[in-house]
Image 1 (cartoon, helix red, strand yellow):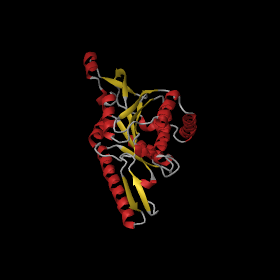
Image 2: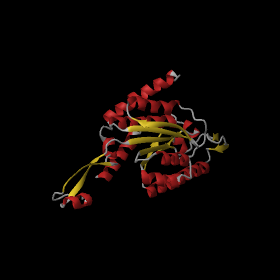
Image 3: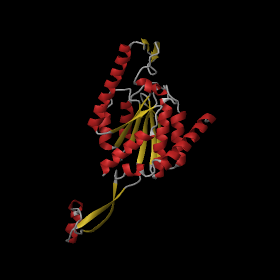
Image 4: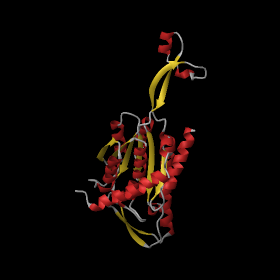
Length: 292
């Protein structure tokens, strides 16, 4: 049985996110993911102005005059959310936990996808892939995806982005839009990221809580690593401690940004407590410029 609280939360997210899709993202999703695939339509005679690279040389040789292949945009896409369910997602200093915030963002994109008649799938991972929802179409299916994001309780607490990406490399046989949703508090995923980006359209969504970027000045606090259970007592009233924390965080993000740039994948930075509409719109505009 699914708890009433989860059903209520799913309905609430559906109402909020569907309104956002209708009011803000109408047409945006379609425009940035068009052209990911082309399917053969017909062969016709060559006409002045046609691209000579489209000439079908086999048909041309048989017919004795030039013919070209016509293609049409393959609009039905497959969208898969690769979502980090490690214990660090249970942290939140703002109005939501990181995993709740991530679920809402996935819902916005999932409803955008089904509005475009695309298939939506889900792979949930910790230090292994724990839950898979096969891509399908339709509102009921998207509600199931959202329910899994909210209701699923992972067996493990660790993180392995590498495991999640390698699983998709084995699973996905045709080009797919892959949204990787994580706080990216992990290393060692460089190689599978490069491989995944070569075969698919990969978009990274880095979800961060404000307290993971900057420590507040609240005196002595005990920090606990949600994934390992390791605890450490630190003095946040010390300026040196706060600056060291911020410097290490900044270094990790710069190293990740350099990797993402080298791999030519888009990364959307999303901050819990802030609106995700502006970062998503900025991403849409950036992708649209690429197509133009």
